Length: 287
Image (cartoon, rainbow, N blue to C red):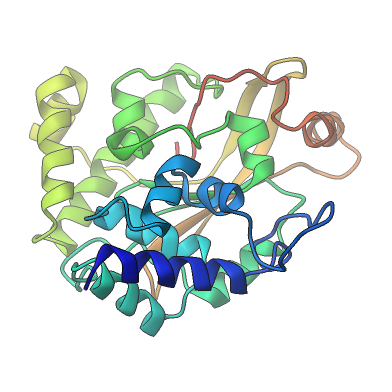
């Protein structure tokens, strides 16, 4: 398959996805009903320039991570996803690899949760999708690439975060994350990217290595999260963690009790959006 065929297919499918179907406002006059190139690039977390080169056949050999991101952004079916992988001369991840495919039915469910901060992670705690409310609450993750999108890596590497933990909460998070990665590694022993992630964290985080070698046991639990948002201040929200059994994905949803002070602040976060809330990405997600 040539880069031109891959690019032509991307362009055709981009033209078939309406902004509304992708969870975006239609806004303004459009020459075509489909997504603009900049919109697809934003949804896939890649640069518009790179997408342009892919569509025009000037960029070849996209990575599996890029192809997977494009399948999600284009809302492709399982067969369409396999076809796009084939055009890129790649094989879709098999059953021995941590799944990261968000089916159209799950995507439609997420589209309905527009008023709540929502993120989707795979079983290795890598961020797959975050809606605008999540970006406004936690910091825009669109600029993060590769290992930077993994929650556990960011946590143990001390990356910036808007979540404010007590000592006890941090300890529980540490044990829970190590245990989650251990269970995931046991389920997907052939996943080389997961093995590299664990090896990297053992090398660069003494605390992770200590807990891993000690066989730390814990459990990922949802609880109240205290988050400090620029221009809004501290707000404590409920954090619910929903596991999708058939795809081994985790949906994280933040909410506040109606009429509470936290609900008022969350509404303010929605109004302000990501415009003036600071540019430092933070992905507390499953923490």
